[in-house]
Each structure stands twice: as structure tokens, then as C-alpha cells.
Amino acid sequence: MIHSYWIETYGCQMNIAESNALELQLKGAGLVPAEKAEDADCAILNTCSVRKSAENRIWGRLGFFARIKTMHPLTLIVTGCMAERLQEELKDEAPQVDHVVGTNDKQRIVDILTSADGKTDLHSETYSFGKSYYQEGEYSSYIPILNGCNNFCTYCIVPYVRGREISRPVEEILEEVRFLDKKGVKEITLLGQNVNSYHFEENNEVITFPSLLQKVCAVAGDIAWIRFESPHPKDFSEELIQVIKNEEKVAKHLHIPMQSGNTRILGLMNRRYTREKFLQLIKTIKQEVPSATFATDVMVGFPSETEEEYLDTISALEEMKCIEAFMYYYNPREGTRSVTFEGAIEEEEKGRRLTKLIDFQHEIFTKEKSKRTHGKVQVLVTQVSRNDENQMLGRTEHNEMVVFTGTSPIGSLVLVNLVELKGNTYRGELA
Image (tube, rainbow, N blue to C red; front, side, top):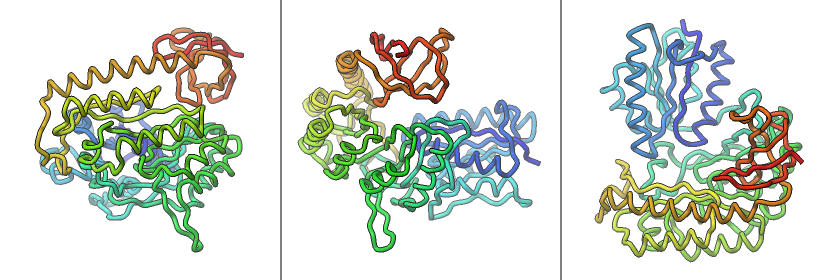
């Protein structure tokens, strides 16, 4: 009989949200979380396939759980994108895994654990959104609004493991926003693999992402910040920019993945915008929303990328002036189009380009963040400092980390006087 569970989540924010929804179901069925993996009756690995390193880590964890199974009974379930991509390989090469559950079936795992016959592995063609993704006590919550992707970037596995885009009904989203507001949540993030391609039709009306964002703002109540992850540059409309500008609750920190600053490489990636269009988008946002800050994703070492094309990415980042960037070099993913491309870059050269990129971007981080070391800022309190119980940690609207002197309830919004920048963290005092 299964009484306790252990969940491990790998990869994106959508996986985190889906694990939260699954945990709500498990608790609703009477199961309780185990204090550690070794004590659980059931272990669930919610996996990622975006990078090979993520899959390698899962294979290592499967060895760990195989050893646990030699000591006491354990039901081991692998779900998520790796389970979708490698379902037959997992069945053949990981006999310790009891169930392989596809991406679209995470919400039905509770059926496996509570049914008398232990239902067989699940692989549905249709994705189902959870009723809620809230974890008790959260002050910052995710709200998935769209699953899947229609873009088929040549390096990306997501459309193959999550399927085509499915938008969540508007009223379900708004109900969850109202619910989170009643629970005292102060920050929400609308999630989708390509969040700004949201498209839902009801009562002969088409609801696009900008109009959905306005509806969310209208019912958000005491929720202070509304974020969204991750928008595609090709779908970043003028209408969306105006909503960001005019809606006070929309956080003015935008994660807009660039991937490359060179038009030819962007074409090979099937990103469907040019360097010029991307930089014009950033320029327009800066003009319309002067307080906006940016985060981005950047890939170097794509097949056939020349040194000059790599330097185009460097110069584009110089124009963008991000205060956050997720930087990595190209790794081929089996099943994507780019694995067939000629002109593979040597690992050593990819590493050199990435190191230079990181060093360059860190200079931009420091320069841009130093400009912001002044005055009072609103901070969402996240925890007590591990180094000093008289100090608190928090984040600003622009996702900047702040350490400040004073005591405030975790989850509260406070005003902090910024004093200095140390590394990537601001120091301040409670106003």
C-alpha cells in the first residue's frame, strides 16, 4: 500500500508548475510527502529533455533508486519530457522503473498509485491542464496558460515531447488568478513554451495574449506583479508592448530569448526574425517602457557559425544591455533537424566562445545594475538571510536580489533603500 511519495523535478518552470499540480492531487488522495527519498513508498521523477546533461542526470538518479529498491519496496515512476522521448529505452534499459508516464498524462499518475490493479503506463495524445498549480503558503505562483509549441526551432526538442500548442480556457486562468489573490499570493507568472502565442476562441471572440493579460490584470486584486515566460520575439506585438506600458501590475522585467545576434544563424535556427527586427523590438520597448529591463537566452557554437557571426551576438548583447542572461553552447539533440546540419563546431571552440561571452555579459550586468543602486525600491521578501538573522532576502520587480537590514514577514512587500551592489546582489536597509 502506498502512503508516501517523493517528487523530483528537473527542467523548466512548466515542469515545476505541473509537479505542484500533481502534488495537490496526491495529497487529495490521502498520500503524504516523505521527508527524504529513501523513506518514500513512491518516487516520481518529472524529467527534462531540453539538454543531454539533464537526461544524463536522470540516468544517474535511476541508479540511486535502483539501490533503494533493493532495501525496501518502492514504486518508481518516470514522467515528463524524457519519458515521452525515451519511453521504450527506459522500459528496456531501466528495469527498476515501474511506470513510464508521458508528458500529457502527469495528472493521471494518482490513478496508477491508487487503483487496485496499478494502471499501465499512460501516453495520451491530448494535454490536460491541472485545476490548480498552487502550493500552500506560496507567495509567488506559476499559472500555465499554454502547452506545447508550433515553432519547431531546429535545435529544440520541445515540440516533439510536448506536442502542438494548446491554450487553456480563459475563465480557468482567471479563476486561478482570483484564487491566488485570496490566498495572499503577491506575484504570478503566466507560463507557456511560447506564451505570447496564446489563442483561445469563445463566444465568437478571439482572445490573444495581450487581451488575456489585460483580463488577468483586471482580476488580480492585491497581486503586485504579473510576469510571463517565455515570449517569442516574432509574436511580440505592438499591442502587447502597450499593455506592458499601461498596466501597472505587469512587471517591467522582460525575458525575451534572442538565441543569436546573426541573421543567417537565426535563419538556420528557424527563429523567423532577423537581427535587425529583434534589435528594433528591444529599441521600441525601451522607448515605450523606459523602466523596462531585460533577460535573454543566448546560444553560441551553432553548426557553421563563424567567428564573425559569433561576434554579431556579442554586439547584439551590447545593444540589448540585459541584467540577466542564460548562456550556453549548442548541443545536438537527437530528433531535431539541426543534428543533420554540416559545419559542427569543435567542443573546445564552443567552450572558448561561451567563456568569452559570459565574461563579456558579466561586465554588462555589473555596469547596468550599478546604475540602479539608488533610491527606494519595492522588494518581495523571500527568506531570512542564512548569514545574519537580522537581515532578509528579497527580489525586486526587475528580479534583482536584495539583502536588507530589518525584519519583515516572508511574502510581504516592503520598501528598501538601496545602498550598494556587491557581486550580483544589492545591499540595502528597510525604509
